[in-house]
Image 1: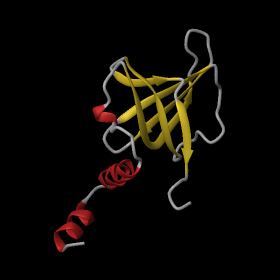
Image 2 (image 1 turned 180 degrees about the vertical axis):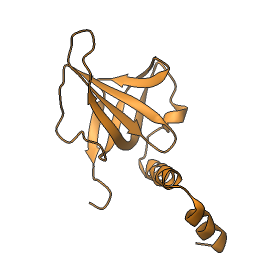
Image 3 (image 1 turned 135 degrees about the vertical axis):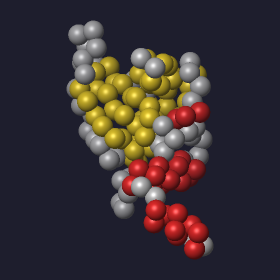
Image 4 (image 1 turned 30 degrees about the horizontal axis):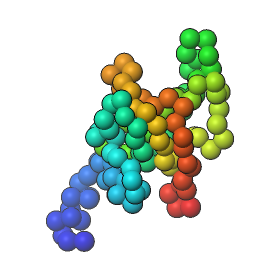
Length: 122
């Protein structure tokens, strides 16, 4: 690492460091698209870390909602009919696939296929 890169790393905020790490992980996740480049109304595969998980019923149906961050942006994953999913917890890395739609201005995938990935350091 050059001196300029070291100085940049020292001056970076925690959020910038996390975003760089997620973008680097995205490069390793073959076949995945960065969230900020996801086309709406098309199938896509993404990889990132879960930032939050919320139980939020929709129209009287149980729904588990997770916010996936990949360093470029955030994607909302919604599993209808679920109250919880083992392993889907904040801090967990996840690869997800499904149809991207726009809900309240946010990219969202309903009932995505998913693969749990090792946490950092595992």
